[in-house]
Image (cartoon, rainbow, N blue to C red; front, side, top):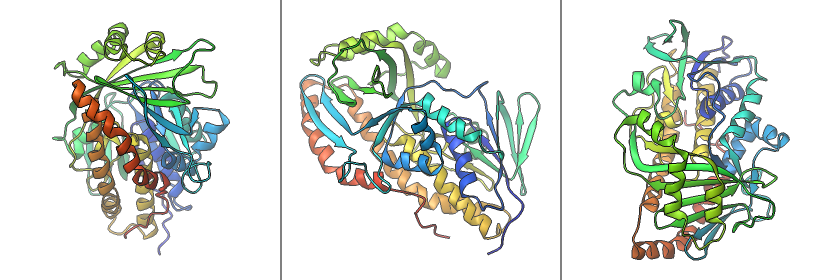
Length: 425
């Protein structure tokens, strides 16, 4: 194989978790004598460290371990380990358990990992700490991209302030409202509202306050799903998140921002939906939660274009879908699989000059996995929809059987290590 000495220049649009982990993966898997120069541009004035609490499944933690982030999470004591996810009916009792302990109690896969509930802010802080260790990566905030031009040899982005940047490759890691997609890669593929909103806050429970779960619980109701979970090691704070059907307000993103800014209105809506729970701690947790945020859940169509000759979309920019329990891990796997494909192309001497061969290999590997995850996410939307008593009774009857029936397939996902997946070119 030819050895490539000249490093690539790569632009990443988006300084969130997808863009930052993409930069780390591109650095880790590049040929050692051709580590790329990576320029990350974020539209916000600073990286956004606010947000809810996500569940990092074993396969997600395995990717963060490869990228050097898991070590920082442990050193900083971020998040709370999860042995099992408990599933409850808010009107009666526990329905099922999804276990992360594995056959020896140490976790799932090799190396074994359990699961980790962590705030988006803490996970981002851990990634940013690792980013700062790499001289080949720069992060510039407060840059709004207004134009993207691609030629046979390079791609140039122009900013609102008149500045510009040119590179060999552009990575669109800028989320569901991706400028990279809407201005260049696939302008006709726009996000659509799913009819579901995620409302969340954090309740600092008083000492001795009793909850109905060991660490994290998914609580079903006739009018949505509520997640209650510890998210830090002291277990002094409980994440309270609700997925619920909310009609489209019809005024776009700005209108949703105005509605979401009314925390007390959101709290009142959550109390109407879940406040009649027979589980004693649920109503007080809703009442104690601080500063509820309301986020509409958008999605993209299942099929669409992910790339051009020199631009590639990753994460939500390519395949945003409703939450289905593994969304964050899927993004991490995206970054690693893509980086390995690009590294293989570099090792082969960059045949043809364009990375299109690497892009095509990545899409062949990932599109079937994303299609399956997309289908799974549709079930989430169905489970959130308001239901009558009969429909809800049938749902609660089916949940334990579904958890049992799908356990082997979940564990196979959790065992995955995409650094070991064979590349087909």
